[in-house]
Length: 88
Image (cartoon, rainbow, N blue to C red; front, side, top):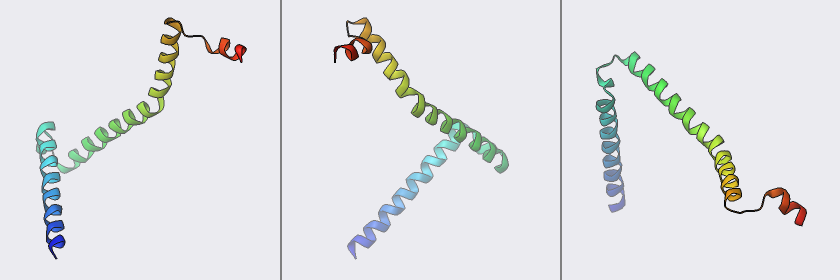
């Protein structure tokens, strides 16, 4: 019984915290003054842009990091991959 009341209280605190975060989001972006249909358009554009940035960084950042590491290892005296393949 103690856990049930504690879990209910934690859920209430979490719900209040998420409501507070959403309220802060509305205040910071200034969309609290918009109509509901304008809010939905703004939110969908914002979240699709964030999703595109996350996807692009997931796909392209590892490639660029690998290329940068190859470039800097070549600058600082590392052997190129073709030389390593010939040695084996």
